[in-house]
Amino acid sequence: MDRFPIGLLLLIVLSLLIYLGLGHRVLDRMRLSDRAALLIIAALVLGSLIEIPLAGRPTAVTVNVGGALVPLGVAVYLLAGAGTSEERTRAIWGAVLTGAVVYFIGTYLMRGLREPAGRFDFTDPLYLYPLIGGVVAYAAGRSRRAAFVAATLGVLLGDIFHYIRVAVARAPVRVDIGGGGIFDAVVLAGIFAVLLAEVIGELRERIQGGPADEGRPESLLAGLRSPEGERGDKGGTE
Image (cartoon, rainbow, N blue to C red; front, top):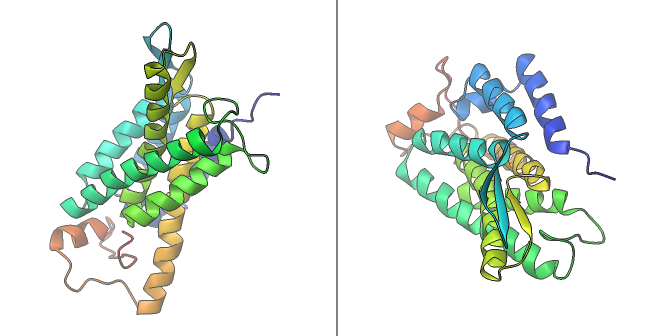
């Protein structure tokens, strides 16, 4: 039985929530408008149907537009709008760390099981990768933008690391970068990492009695203010 496309389902639900006016707080702090978010979701959904072949035998590889190229473009946009160079650095290193963790889990903890990384007996990697990737990405990135970038690019890097491994071994397999279950994992990891930043950030703000602005550069504070002029941060989880 084919895997249910949970990533597409979540994107549809997310687009409905945005259309109904929910999620403004998170989108504002990621510097995304409702229209931009809906366009990105549409690009993810439509792009998931497009595979671009890059190499043939013995190891074939294709790149999924919705699962690889669109997240990459969104990540570049978010990095360009980051408040500080430190946030960009956290996001990039967070992506590398997340990719290494995802690759390690798939290659060494699921050895001998079905490619690209098999299955644990107690859960499907579809849920394991984004959960672990989201946690690692948030811990490394801390802000919403950095966590999203680290989570989505990290899962993709794990897929790329897998391709490099089988290509070096000249294994006669096909690797779909960003396709299949990895598309779902990218979507889930990005959403989970942002939710972690939002929930943990909300708790930190309540504990400290409000957003922490003191000693923070104006460039970062400007990025934390919504278009209506509302300021808000989560004590490091912008």
